[in-house]
Length: 85
Image 1 (cartoon, rainbow, N blue to C red):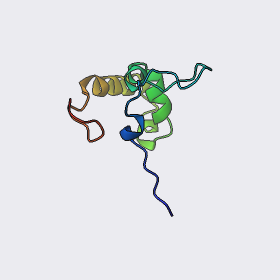
Image 2 (cartoon, rainbow, N blue to C red):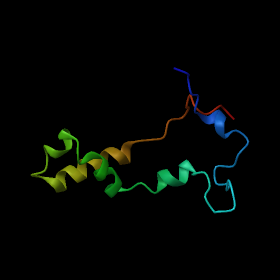
Image 3 (cartoon, rainbow, N blue to C red):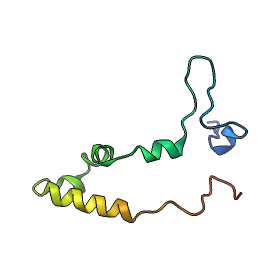
């Protein structure tokens, strides 16, 4: 099977918010998308996970744990996918 390379190099020289064509469809700006992630989207992903469902009997406390965990997260200082600037 042939290898398919997909990564940042595919986007070089292109503005992430720039439109590809005249129909208004453009590339997604990942920072903007990440800022739009909220509790509902996180719960939608986790709702099928057994570790999440185990706490169905205490949903308020579970939501608090998730909120606390997410608030303590930080973006990586360096990524293997993005060169230093």
